[in-house]
Amino acid sequence: MAADQLVPSETTVLHTQPPSRRGMPKLLRRLMPLIVVALVLLATFVWVATLELDSIEQRTLNADYIVARIGEHLFLSILAAILVAVLAIPAGILVSRSRSRVFRGVVIGIANIGQATPAIGVVILLAILWQTGFTTALLALVIYSFLPVLQNTIAGLAQVDPNIRESARGMGMTPAQVLRRVELPLASPVILAGLRTALVFAVGIATVATFINAGGLGDMIVNGLKLQRYPVLVVGAILVAAIAVLIDWAAGVVEDIVRPKGL
Image 1 (cartoon, one colour):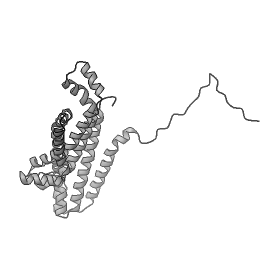
Image 2 (image 1 turned 90 degrees about the horizontal axis):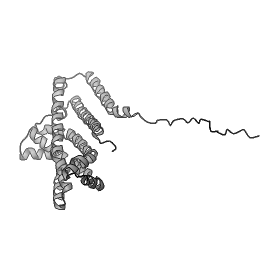
Image 3 (image 1 turned 135 degrees about the vertical axis):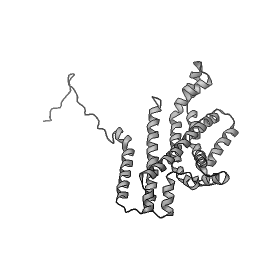
Image 4 (image 1 turned 180 degrees about the vertical axis):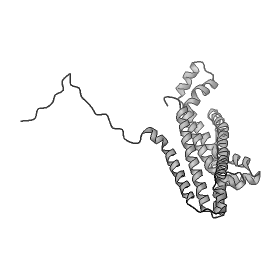
């Protein structure tokens, strides 16, 4: 005889097991870069503490020297990213508003030259044509980091739905109000992604600023190579990589915070 089958009645409550959540929790995923960087820096500190440093390495691998180089590196990188935002976003708006293909091609072509040229080439060329020092390195970083923000601004504004623009105009908004209150907020995720890329570019390229006496963590890397002090070289390289990861992480957090709701 077949087993009796359970037939649910109107009062039967069916209990279903909620789907299990797979993968890493969101908070842990968000904090994972910080955890990895902290572990790498801790391992580096422990490794250096076990070494017998000579007088040259002791003058370089100390808190005062490292903090000073990190401060120079961050100041140069962040200032360059700010200048890129001030210059590239308005340029992207002008290009997106222009109907002239010639103007569009000229602006993007000039920006492409800075991106296509090797970073060390831009830095050395400007030093030869102009001068050495902080200002030249800053200009080189702005030139090299200009294109991602320009292209993302153009792309972000181009993806805004034309019907949304027409609706805003129908509400009586002026073109400037449509840009400020509708288009730029909708394009902000793409623009911020470009700024994030430019900032990480600036952190990496600021390393070569040491060749024109602009300071930064590149001093540690170059001195470690020239003097064959590999602990100095390794610490400098790890610090540059850690700063790039942390800045990318912080930019991602800011991008999530300022992103308009619903996007």
